[in-house]
Amino acid sequence: MNHNYLKYFLPFSFIILSTLTSCKKVFSEDNYVAYFGGEILNPQEKYVLFLKDDEVIDTIFLDKNNRFMHKFDSLVPGLYTFKHNPEYQYVYFDKNDSLMVRVNTFDFDNSIVFCGRGDEKNNFLIELFLKNEADRSLMYDKFDKDVKSFIKNIDSSYAIRKSFYLKRKAEIGWDANFDLIAKASLDFHHITKKEIYPYAHQFRTGENIRSSLPKDYYNHRKTVDFNNAVLTNYSPYIKYVSVLLNNVALQSNKDDLNENSLENNITKLNITDTLIHNEKVKNVVLNNVAMMYLLEDQNMYNNQKFIERYLQLTTDKDNKKEISEIYNSVQNLKVGNRLPKIDLIDKSKQVIDINSYIKKPTVLFFWTSHAESHFAASHRKVTELQAKYPQYDFIAINVNDNDAKWKNALKKYNFENIQEFQAVDFESIRKKWVITKIHRIIILNADGTIKNGFANLFDVNFEQNLK
Image (cartoon, rainbow, N blue to C red; front, side, top):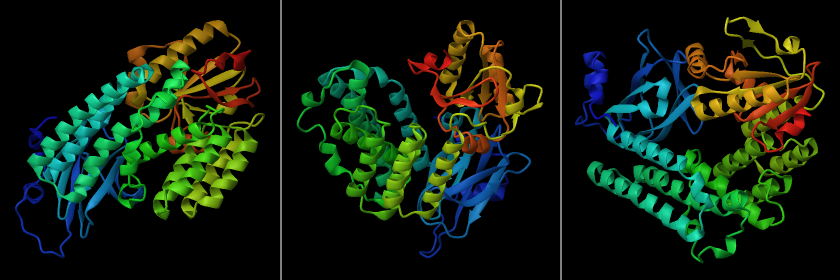
């Protein structure tokens, strides 16, 4: 973390800078004025969205220098989100905080630096987030280990990050409201791994180790407040609840180890209904279960049964509408249909109509530079498949990069034998083609009709779709 961050903001006017750094200014009890501003390097849009609980409060436009500034006449202290499509990150405001953020979209999370009144808390959150992400990237092989080795590994990792948390808490001296967020970021990352381990271990090794778990293995569940609305839309909480539901559902349906099956997902809905009593929290979790299920299991009959149960339990009208729209989009992608029209362009910026372009059986796969390892792996896999299945065309579609990032990624890896298109509008392809998971594959017949709208390139049985 660069602690000389103030120098980056010197081009701002003296008035704004002095406002943001007047940390000793005394405010009246009824004054909740706050400021949020900053600079976006390599912007993808002309604005920044400011949100609370996934609802947009303000759209803040960038000036000609890609900077922004907004005064809130009254801003309730708490956790907010700022979003510059397609990325987002959290920002915490105490009463009368004045925060500036500097972001480079080419490395969004790693580039974020805050300054101004309230900066120390927010820089801590970013640092802890990055530590958690680094730890997460090293975890997958750890799920293969025996119970004792796994617990030793995650406890050691947790101890290191807890020491960091305690040190910064003592140095900054934050209040209990912020500590709820800080502790959630620390603890949920840890207990999420504990919930994943039993079923991840079985999936990866074939060994059921549930009977080998210590008797106190799940004691952490007793400490979780599942009805705390403050954490409703906080990603560490949502991730934890998702893996908890997976774990419990798979344990309940012992003969069905498919976390995306109809039975297991209806079990998840029912567990949520029993476990969570706060209506707001329950609706968010139900919505998350529905989103994950609809984008994975594409048996149309299953979808209908699942939707019926979901609609019985949720009380959020907006969520009902969103899930119903996804359900309808999924129906449009059934076998024999043509793809809904979206705008694609080639490297020369010529508009392509995919339904007119298809002349032979075709595989469409998707990528983003934000998931570089997947980009490289998917292109390498397709290169192998091209040699084995010359009767197929293979088309790569970039979903959410700007023109420069798209072309730079292609130049870096030089997969020159693969046709490359780009989606003009991410929201359009996300909604119409239901592209919310980057491993999705769409297989088309020679006449452009859908053969399989929901394949996975890295499924061990994927090639059966091409025979």
